Image (cartoon, rainbow, N blue to C red; front, top):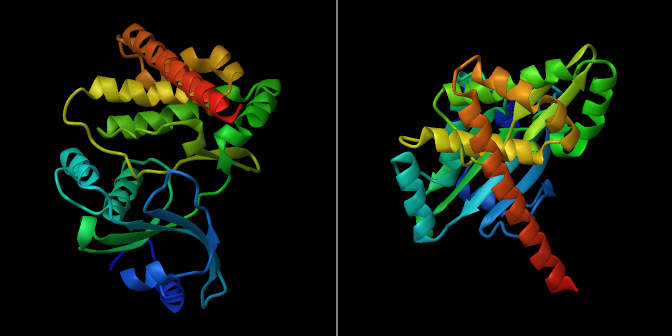
Length: 273
């Protein structure tokens, strides 16, 4: 079992008291709130709320991975250059993101055990405050526009994405559902979540960055995109001379995502008619 840099003794003791200190115990665990959804296959997500000996309450997420096809393991080897478990990959990605200055969750611990179909692994991470931009962004940004605060949000969002990309990494699922907004007195904070697919491309970096940006553009509130996307892209690029190239490529990719989602929605509607 590997413990994260920011996991203190009280939190570790609380996790051990819950039985979350080994692979078999983690897979036998029946506490917390199940967050399963269709399409996860041999993956499970559970929300935990634990109180440690110091009286502090921790909101955590337990992610469990139970084997996978050979093709998935090969893709991970091709992507990361080593045959690590899914839990190890995400644990390392969280640590890298924090070191790049990208606000995200904290890695608490992970463990893995080799076996059939790649074996089993699990990961525990902290929650981040706030809610996903896909749920609260429109309301928040409407209010920000009225008080002329949307520019600070745009700059903060551009800074978050730029920090990740400047470090050589891309997210690969950079939708508004994976950026959390925390409103606090006098301001707000942004956090990036779901780093399981984050990686450092060794070629075609422009393509991967464009994909991230297009996912964000497609999923953000349309009013903000219309009013602030150019401003966002300018802040993200920091005055680089290839803004036009990025803008065109991002729009093409966003349009492609839009068409794909429309086809998917049409197939779903046809299947339920």
